[in-house]
Structures are given as C-alpha cells and as structure tokens.
Image (tube, rainbow, N blue to C red; front, top):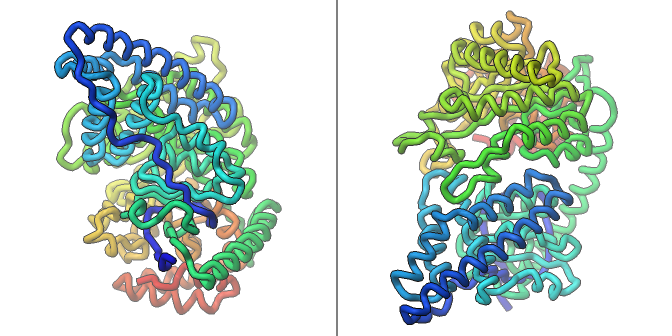
Length: 600
C-alpha cells in the first residue's frame, strides 16, 4: 500500500473533496509520423482543411451549449478556439509542415501545436502562458476530426458512480466544461494557474481545484484515494484514516459554520457593536457570479474585473475584445440582476502580467512598470471608447459605477472624464438613454496616487484602495517571487500610514473610500482597516459572511484604539505581535485567531 503523501499546489477554486483518482490524459504526446509521396501532399492538405471545418462546427455547437448553460462570457472561450482554426496563420503553419516535410496531417498538427505551446509556456506573461492549454485543446479537436487522437467526451460516461477526482497534466477547457458534476468532485493538475480557463470554469461550477502541483502525475496513481483542498492548495494521496477523519470533521464543521454565517449575512444591513454601518460588497470576474453576490449576502459588487472578458477570449496571437453590443449585454445582465445594489465595474486593467502583449505593441523589460491599466487604455483609445460606451449604455439598468485602475495622478482622471463625455454624447445622438450622472472612481494602487489622494479625491465620486498592488509598489516586493515573497507584508508601517493618509483625504473631500484588495478578506486586517476609518469593503463572495460577522462583533472604538497603536509601531513584527495580543481577547476571537496565527 502506498504511503500517505501531501502535495502543495496553487488553490484556484475553494472547497474540499475526497474521491478516487482518475488519471485524465486528454491528449497523446505523440502522433504517428507517416511519410507521404509528393503527389499525396495536396490531398493531405485538403484533408486537413476539411477536418478544420468540421472541428469549427463542433466547437461552435459547444459554444452555443455553454452560452445557454453558464453564459456568453464562458462561450467566448470556445469562439476563440474556432477563430484559431479559421486563422490562416495557424493552419498555414501546419500546411507548410505537411508540404515541406511530406508528412501526414496528424503528425504536422501535433508537432506544430507542441512547438507553439512551448513558446507560450515560456512567456513571462502568466495569462498568455496559460493559453497553451487552449492551443492543446484545439489541436486535440483537430486531430480527432482527422481520425487520430482520443475523443475524451465518452470517458466521462464510463466513470464509476463513486466520487471521482480528475488528476491531469493540464485540463482543457473542452474537458472542463463537460465534467459531470454528479460524479467528479474535484480536480488537480500539474500545470495551470488562477487565470487558466479550466480554473475559471471550476470556480463557476463550484468544484474544488488545485493546479500547478509539482510531480502530481508521478505521485498519484489510478484509483488512489485523494483529498483535494481547494482552500489551502493541498492534494493528499492515500491519506491516513486519521487525516480522513480530520478532513470529514473539518468539512462537517465548516459546512455548519458556513451555513450559519451565510444565513446571518442575508439579514439586513451590518452594524458594529456601537451602531456604525459597514458595507461589505463582492469582487467578481464574470457575469454569472452575480448569483454568488446574492447567495452570500454581499451588499452589491465592489469590483467587477472586466479584463477577464478579454482574458477569457484572447487567442494564440491576436487580441480579441468583445464588441460594444456584447459588452453592453453582459454589463446590463449583472446590473439589472443586482439592482438596486451598486455594481462597481473596473475598466480594463491589462498590461503588466495580465495579457495584452499584443496591445502594448513592444517588448517591455519591466512590464509591471510599463503600459498597464489606465495608461494602456488611454493609449488604445478605440478599445477604451468601446468599453466606456457599453458601460454608459448599461447604467440605466441600475446603480452602475465606473472604476479606473492604476491611476497615478489627476491628469489621467481628467482625460477619462473627457472620453466619458464624448461617449455619452455619441450614445445620446444614437438615441441610447444614459443617466445624467454615472459615478466615476479611481483606484489607489500606486504610491503617487496615495500621496496625492487629497488632489485626486475632489476629481472623482469615490476612491477604492487596491491593496495588492499598493503593497507591491510601495515595498518593491513581487509576491510571486519566492526569494522575497515573505517581505510582502500588508501590515507594514508604510502601508498602514499610506492607507491612513488616503482615509483622511477622502474624509476631507467627503468622498467614500472602499478597500477591494486581499486585505479586505483577512478578518484581522479587516478589523485594522475598520479602525483606520474605512467603512466599505469588497472581497470574494464566499468571504463576505465572515467579514460581516467580524463587523457585528466589534466596536469601532476598540478598532480605532488598535489602529492608533499599530500606527505608532516601527516594524511589521511589532504590528503583528500587537494584532495577535488584541484579537485573541476579542469576542469574535474564533474568526480572528485563525487569521492572525503565524502572522510575522
């Protein structure tokens, strides 16, 4: 019997599940190579073209089914696959391989996809690197229609009735969307990331998932008993009975606790012990997540990351943006579904490590400090105008608010306002109704914005703190860099003082301020920011009930006392020690202690 083994990966979809492992090989690594006579080459190229046409028809049919089941933004993944098979640049590479090497189409497809996929996986841009899985998916589909490769769809029907965990090198979007949720309880892969299409689909389906698990396929065998912990990013192979018992106990305990917190989250506005109202909204990436906003009791949407509409459709080399009508339809569905709750939609935050290499138009030595967020949008004004028109055209459906990312100064906000005025005028000329006033906000994510918040605040209707980037830029720490990741400290005195400065600027200008970074979802840091003067928060939908419970169990006076003490301390270690001492004594300690344990 195999010994118990735990493997650490990246958590991409929360939840925990236990099942038997099924090794999921969605593609063969090699295809048989057959030499062609020269007179056979034209016929082979024609066979390839016919297979591409039939593959496109099947993919478009899948896109139609996906659109009906979970929404057009997910269907866009498959429309992009079909677009790639229509792209002469892609098929031309395969045809050239057939012609120059005089080989069969199956081998040419596999060799071309492998070469292009390797290039994608080597890219520093995480979002584009994950598109290699889409390329593999397209190649598998094309080979299937050439009569080679395996159609994996029938394998799902052969799965046993017992709970199953899929173990794969990488799960393709086509396989992910066909997962029978009554049988497959989780999946884990060696490759992938939080922005990969399989991860996005897993979150939509509510299936626990862990990706980027080193040596997963070498460690887990067919039929092994496996636990997937999508919260902590752990995969257990052949867990001991003690581990299974702990897992079952945890699952039961968390389900009961989650049920109780969720029920309380749905009841009325949240007030602290001393009667101050606290607003807790949700962060979402896709339109279908509007249902999660309601299900988890959030007070609307504090951050709709609209760039995922781009990241879910981008193809092999060309950037693809949804047109105005499609974007308008998506925004309207979210805003009308959640009305009268507010929906804050962030304009495209692309660049840096989030796609858009083609948009930038040049190699950037340090893309995080390059064309990103509003800088990129103001450089690509046609793309930006299209999005602004779609947002304004949707605003009459409810309480839509526009948020601009990566603002570094007042001049950028003024340029955005000018483009908004032009977009509004064009819509009105076309007879499209637009409210007299659509709130415009700015994200405070870079030190220059925090230091000039007193100048920016009067120019906008609200401000939102993006703490993830603010920490990164202020402390000069890339949290994805293992050599310095321990220096990524949200409770660093520099961060606390910048936040306090922004709070004061908003108070002076009578502008609301929200926090929408990961700090908001940490119960202890939530308490600290409450004490710094913040009353609006935004986080993942599942984190909303916990934040609300923390707010109900604390008085602002106590939180302010803790914040004052934290601001007086010179090091992150001393701030952490203070938080540990204070939160252990609080009434909500069971929620806070878990967060503060191990904080350094």
